[in-house]
Length: 191
Image (cartoon, rainbow, N blue to C red; front, side, top):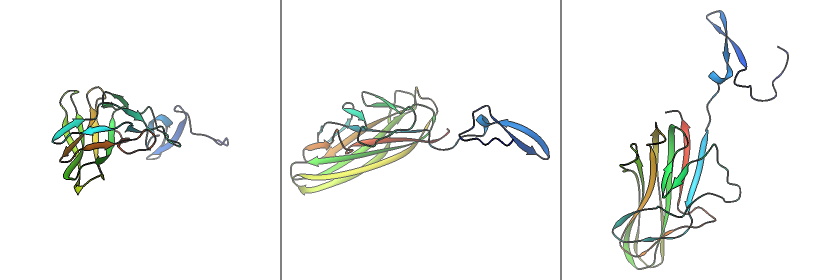
């Protein structure tokens, strides 16, 4: 009992605990845990046209953040045609940040939207960020929304991101080197 551990115990290392005076042993694998096990971030790399009056899915030009100093935790999410699959079950914090550029002078309502599914088919709006630009040319605006999502099955529980504009003409602001329109996924704990 005099040997000091210099690193995290192995899963099969045992601890002694007193259960009402009776000594019992328990494997470290049964008591370890806590902390964030998954964190990832994705962004849109090239401009998406903002068509007035339509809700549009962001289905292409996604990339995992690769800026200097970026680091993810765990396996990270996967993306296919704008559909994000989570790497493991759990409660996730999902945020969506979006920037807009409106080139013509008009009142413009602008939205960033999070949609999720629990059956790998029917997507429902669960997060809505709204901003606006009023009668200005070359205007910029940003909005963000976030949700807590209970993923009980990685095959059926997924997320997508949309945007909506009403008035003016312009685009969703993007960049391949910095986050402008991007999503963040953090697993907070077990489902």
